[in-house]
Length: 441
Image (cartoon, rainbow, N blue to C red; front, side, top):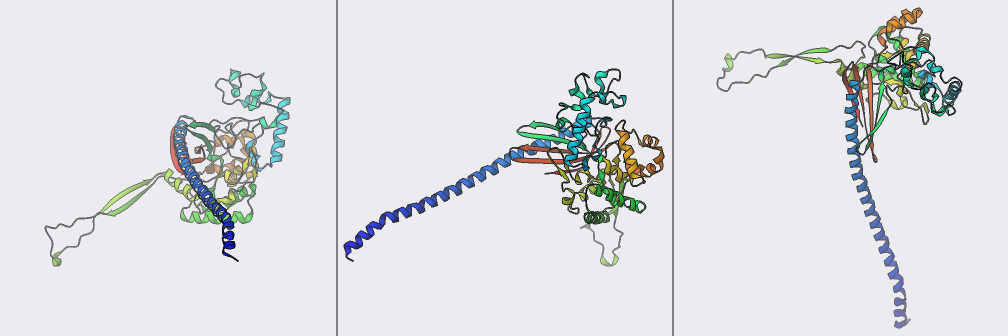
């Protein structure tokens, strides 16, 4: 081939080479641009998340202070009577279809007798003046059926809600509150811990009730569809915790006396010869340390919330829908509570409590039916009402109560893409509130 042919061939390939180089450059530039934009977006997202989380954290902390301050001004939560309404006690075991059927049946009953729930004198709740019917049950107009039991449409069962022992759905003592603090949306929920099964019962150091305690745990777990293998694993986990700190019902402040050696300085001016040096007994100082009951309960709460217990199985949903989320963990007291409130506990928790005395299922049924009309004022009131079971109730007396003192405050704050939460366990005696433990997330 002549030189002229070679030159023409090289000249003909130049546009292709230029195009190839251009494409490579475009790919490199686009890759660099994508990488740079991705990094910038990630950086903006991180910065945005930090700002949002700070706002959420501030909102959460502020809401915690607000909730505790508000709770100090609230008297003992007031129970309500619910004689003509479905009871909350067995909702945990109902399937979604059974739950919908229950609401549908209730809607039909209410449609035909809308004023039945206020026709019974025993159904008076939150009333300040029994002579003023406008104050009964918070109803201002008896001709307006929409005010009865919070029903807005009798033809729509979804408008019905099954009230808990305090009015709101179990285990809330007040309706959850939502408000805004700056850019954060905050939700506060206050739950009755005495309405739940105290897990510490399975770790009791009293050998006399060991068999009953195990039977109560098994009763509770079987109701919540926890199988035998999982129950045995839970028992083993609780046994390991009890070996570290046995659970006690009767907690009292503990005073520890310790003798601490006192350091004595050596004088540099006068030194005794080795042969004549006198050996002296070291001086000691006696110190007294008082461990309050709240600190002891906090120890149980820390152990029960530690990795020593596999809560994944307990948190497994048994029923989940838009309105209901059921699991064993929802009904378990994991904060060191020691008593069950017979006015606020559901059936399986009641049966676990009355297992310590016997006739658990019969007593639980009687309690559920009677408290709907009139909550029990004290344990003596329970004994009088269930006279035939008074001996069994007496054996359970130290495990039950009629007034809750143990609560948890759950606070959730959301700002943008960030979320902050806190759970505070407290005990309340009158106006006095004592913090037990706090978990922040």
